[in-house]
Image (cartoon, rainbow, N blue to C red; front, side, top):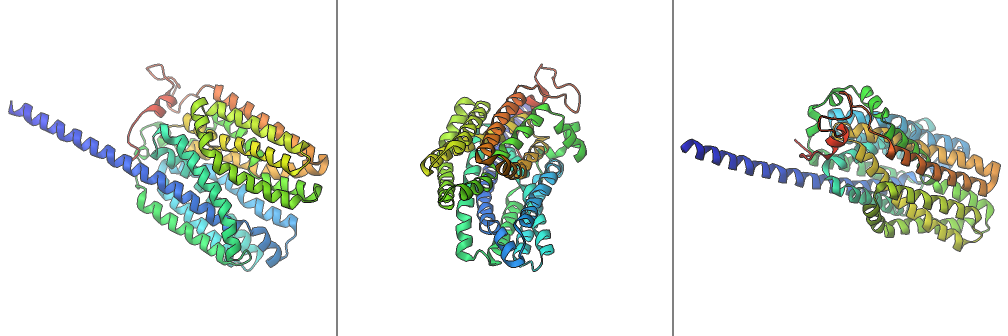
Length: 442
């Protein structure tokens, strides 16, 4: 009888201990999510107040031509797109915290270097360091947010993150102008913001994640093999291809649209300013309704709807004849943007699990190549075919993106690293892992 009582008391104590651990894990996860959302907004402000004026500094301080400025500014993000997939796989193995802290420290150093550089070579080196570090930060931070948040809250989380980033980029340039667009000070302040965020992540985020203990063969695999395994997932490949086309459409829309407006309309610069303001305002106002639409119809249907709105916006730009029409079609275009960005992240999250989330988000970051291809192909089309030809090209990209995402969504999961994709209960192994509920942190 005494033994039975002792066992009962022990079980009760273990149960209470488990409840305390779960509560601790939830509170830690909430703190991490809030930190990453707030930090992403601060990083966007910091980068907006500094990087917006890169071209001005290169032109005024170093006397570079527009072509050389384009090559220098575009080269950094292109290198970042090549490096970021490996960062995701490394974070799966050694933990998100060390990768994020390292990336933020180097990004901060790069920004300070941009402000203090006295030669083109030093400026180029600092820009490459900053761009590569920023590209490493992005997929790993998204993976960490998925680790920390329950699946039912991830759409809301990605939507909030997107909203604060856009708000930061809207506010940042104004702060930079107030400080001095051609001064080193905005770059130095931006670097300090990155250092502060790195310190906050080091303090708040636990060093050891539950998935870093290596439960599966995938978890124990080297980084290159992890990335290769992720890229053998046809669903992810289609999503990356669709993401490249999407980024070409909306990632750098201001570059090609500004060139078209300033050369084809008398008040082109004024109209462009109104379009930038319209885009920022619609992002802020439409983010919450867009999230509700995604929750109601699902991320895949929301993705297709967003691509169709992109298509309609681009066709509208091609045939618009006045500022009112252009602003109306910018509203349509931006609603598509607030639908596709969180929906895309949710689609990638749904095909990943705790062991490979960094690899999947890292591989998906290859879609940022679209940021390079959009201005390049758009500029070529604008020169060869005119404004209507350029906009119709982007409309075709939007339609192609919808098709690629639909193909990816319809594709079956691949065979796992350990064997067949179907487990003993008849469920796909990756999906079963994804639905497993367990504490995010050890």
